[in-house]
Amino acid sequence: MNCEAFESNVNDLARGQKMDATVRAQALAHRVECEPCARLLEDESALSFKLRALAADTSTVAVPGLGKDLLIALRSRQRATTSTTEAATWRSRRMITAAMAVAAMILVVVAVTIMRSRLATPAAKDSTNASSPQSPSADDKLVKAPDAVTDHQPSLLPKKNSVFARSNNLRHKTNRVVLSSQSIVSSDSKDVTTEQTAMNVTPNSAPEITSDFMPVGYTPVASLQEGGQLVRVELPRSALVAFGLPMNVNRYDEKVKADVFFGSDGMARAIRFVQ
Amino acid sequence: MTAKPDPSDSELLQSTMAGDEEALAALYQRRAPGIFRFALQMCGSRSLADDVTQEVFMVLIREGHMFDATRGSVSSFLMGVARNHVLRRLRRERFYVSIEEDPQNETTPATSRTIENPLDDLSRAETIESVRKSVLALPERYREVVALCDLQEMSYAEAAEILGCAVGTVRSRLHRARALLTEKLRPEKNEEAAEVKSARCFA
Image (tube, rainbow over all chains, first blue to last red; front, side, top):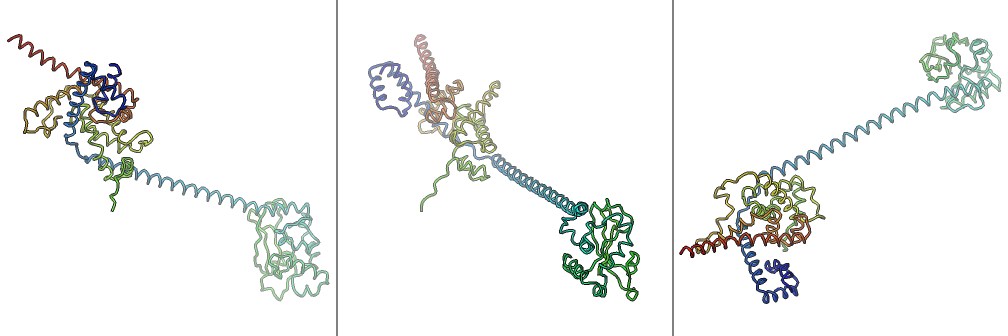
């Protein structure tokens, strides 16, 4: 080992650091041979000794204890973290609630839209069926049951001419629309069969006999295409006379059932009598 | 019954971050002495070392969640923070002239002085004081290497991790620092010798 190599290793040698055994042996051997390097090692060892003394002296200095400031800082940080977490939780809960409310509102709107469209569809189909009577829908059966009786008339209010010729039409149909059991018995066999068919067509299969729908007032047919609602009511028997139907005078104090069809504007558009 | 092993620094740090005050106390008790001594050896002021130690643990409480175990140990993290704070304080107070500290704040501990051999103790104290002054007179880059490797007895790798430089850099800086220290400690001998020499001449 030469002096340059010794100088590069003299620190580790003087500080007692771990080093390669061969290098250490070579360095110690060089120290014996080279006086300046031996002096250098001696100086470095003395310096290491002094530094160790300084380190030992410093280690006796009392270390300050854990200050209250640190504990306060830790507690405040913990509170801040907790409050931040709670705020985040509360914020997320509010977000979820708001999202659920919005979803519920959307669902309600969609449901209302679907219900309205379903209500509007029968009226639209009615108008469609007016031009194509071969495809009556199931929803229209209640309304169109009398139509089956009355020569398959396609619409709720068949034709404008028939509306205006109400009294004649009703008189013509009186033979088929049976309003009492006596008339059923007195009618011919064909009519009885037709009446039974009409009864079977009603949704709840109730033994009801209905007349055709008769227009109330002079409503244009186009307004009926907007849809509406059928309402079962009870009327005095004098209402039969008002629509040109025969009334049993002996039962004048009794009421008669009727289905009133209200348009989308809430006005009564048509009526049929039920027994 | 087997004794429960001491939790590691990382576990203590995690517990501290979870708000465990005992974990903070344990971590402080374990790591504060080294930080305090490093700061004291770097700046020579006990009050400043005190402040730095508190600030280091304050940083640990505030930003402990940023500690990445893959980049080094908790000890190295704390010493790195301490180094940054010490250098910052030294640069800030460079333009101020320090007043003499009260005896309680002396860097020289009174406990090291014994009354059995007062002369030996006096010479030893003088030697330590001269070494301390020499170390404090070193440039910061050399002083921190001496403080870590020689005074804290850390390995080159640990010092390199704290200083954020290569091991070879640490070695070369330490070599240069020790050479500077040897030079700084030598003139006193030369001065003493010169005084004696002049006295002889005078005689």
